[in-house]
Length: 353
Image (cartoon, rainbow, N blue to C red; front, side, top):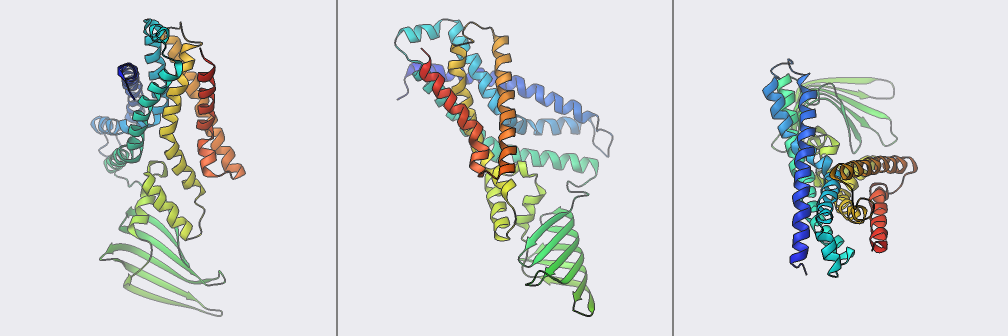
């Protein structure tokens, strides 16, 4: 049960975490603004559009920085209690370090829920709006110059112009036989999805036989089944910006068509472990600040927190790369650094006095 002392620790940690978040996100947003100012002059993309784009990217910036924000906020919050003597008074009254760690973990659980909401809904939505704003101001589509390859049962589809999830152009469809040989190819100038089917225009169909080919030209053609707009919508977004639900749908589509979904499965597990990483970072800071950084100033705590964050980031990247090379299960590759840090935090808490 949470008592007044626990609430005091939780509020202190969350207050300092909010201050750290405000500072880091402000710096990150300024960097985004300055880097994009150099892109002004393309179409109607001016300073006001750059400012709007930078503000819309704030949720994504906060989500990226959330683990290091949680770590630095806890270092500063617990450090302030230690520096003012309040932490010493708590421990003299019989409050164990584990109890303080538990209160910090409760604060971390609240931040973890916020981080999941931020990364699964707010950040992808605002980033999609920001990207659309930037691309429309520049006068270029978000998928310009990119081809999307998809598999649909016995058909392989290449879409050169993905205007939106229900509007495609410059499409080539290859239909394969049971033995994997090419049976027919379909080139389409434009396709629009309406009333539950694709309406294709500018169609040229080529059928391949053993000794000849047959070419048929059609002004329009209706395709009753095939790849749905919901699937295409997933490919319009960057994979890293997809929600957990979107990644599940994309993985399901790729599994149904016997495609390699390991990349997206890893992204899904990284998204699911991110809130746990926030909690573990905060728990790790408790024995850290009471031990080596007990008498350190704010600058030293910030430096130490930044170093820990950088090391964890590098270890996380190495774990993902090793998992990709050695085909580790996605939960192991995505969660191994977080699990290791959690065990280290528990060990340090149990040994601290």
